[in-house]
Amino acid sequence: MTKLADWFETSNDATKVLLRLGARPDVISLAGGLPAPELFPGDAVADAFAHVARSAPAVSLQYGPAEGIEPLRALIAAQMRKEGAGSVTAENVLITTGSQQGLTLIGQTLLNKGDRIALDEPTFLGALDAWRPREPGYTAIDWSGNTPVFKPSSDAETMPKFAYCLPNFRNPTGETMTLDARKALVAAAQRDDVILIEDNPYGALRYEGVQPASLISIADQGGDGPYDGHVIYTGTVSKTLAPALRVGWMVVPQRLLHGLIISKQGLDLCTSPLTQYAALHLIETGVEAETSERARDLYRIRRDAMLAALEAEMPAGVTWTRPEGGMFVWVTLPEGTDAHDIFQRAADARVAIVPGDVFYAMNPAHNTMRLNFTNVPEATIAEAVQRLAGVIEGRARN
Ligand code: PMP
Image (tube, rainbow, N blue to C red; front, top):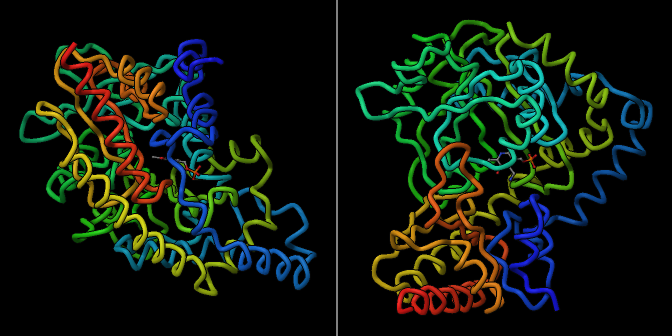
């Protein structure tokens, strides 16, 4: 039988390998980033599709505008205004086929070959995948001084094209940016005229505490709109309804809209209008709000189970983040431990994790790993962490 670890070593495609690992019934997977399937509102989704196909076939089954259907754009704009981005209008909203497509569109529109991107690493693997065809350079945002810096002063290069940010429950670390950091970041972006990408797929999944203001609400200069600030915001229904709908959105400064809409048209003409109308119906009838409420309740329990198990089981020298929301805990192993080695041994113990180095664009920390807590029940999480701790402890003793 092929060892699980061999799959990882023989494939360059970490995402594909993780999905394959997670699909094995004998393996407890803390590796993926999947919502709990028991939350999916199957009947409501079936009803929504039936309703929109029956009641409005002329629009729901036709090609739609590249920028998305007007009522969904208006609804998202209203939500953004309610959350503090007061000048956002429907014109600013571009519906995408998942927020992943927004990242691809940003790469296609803003990046020329060899351009730079500033970010905090580790970062979202899918964003690195989206931009790879442009062969960008990367710079770590420097947080060491009074104000974040997007390029080293020794660097002769021009400013990065944009800075990519995950302010809420960052994938992969679970960390949240403080309000002060957010304000400083927006001020720096305005000073240096750098666009910030605010990727926020997990914002609705907060289990405790108060959400700091979004970057876009801080950057919004007010007025009647359309919004034309320094932040592009991306959102999605993947974590609040179901990833399979593939409905996401970008909130785009007015000056960048035209290029992004043309790019979107070139990619797929439009996001399926049938799905957009169904998603709109699911939001308007409260199914999305109710599903994300249930997700918060379930994931809070699972996060607590994972943190309790880590506390109880992990040997000295292992540290981890304590996320206030989202889907992931980030574990740092003792210096000198190779997480690929742990991955291999954990796979033999039938537990899947992701070695952290895959989430780096520049300087990988090889003693890190990402654990997901949303896709497995509490008791199984405890079992998986116990096995993992045994593997790490065994390794430390060798
Ligand atoms: N951004 C981040 C940080 C993610 O973790 C994900 C996927 N989980 C996405 C974007 C893409 O999500 P989707 O395309 O399903 O909206």
